Image (cartoon, rainbow, N blue to C red; front, side, top):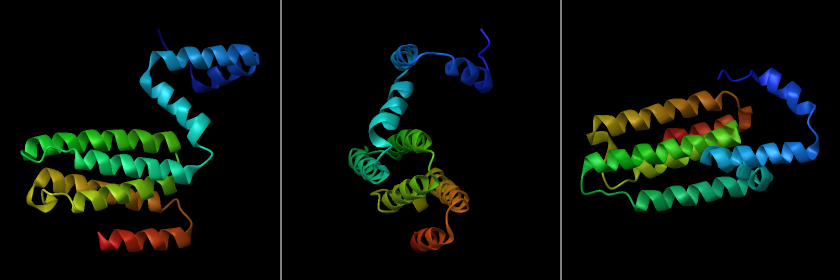
Length: 156
């Protein structure tokens, strides 16, 4: 089955009644965890972006504390998993400022991590690619915010 384009879906959704839209949203949320998470963000957390960011930062700190540091291999796997989840949460928000704040926090935690990231190429590349992603996201922000975040980026 070939999925319809966004324009076609939008046109059809406009013709649906409110109860039908509600039923479609709930049915879609049942199919995939990502859909349910996005719907949760849009309904409950999008109104207060600051608390959303703080909640994710707290989760990041907990996840970093639980990383298995006995082996670099397992630490890298855990860091990739954390980063994958973080990117998903950033995608839910769609806000460049949220992206910059969360990635800066991730890089700060990685820098303070028990295993020195600069001793391992994979971890160093992960760190550098996140810094590059921060720089890209910074270009879409207001100049004052850009300056503040660039100062934080320099300290990393």
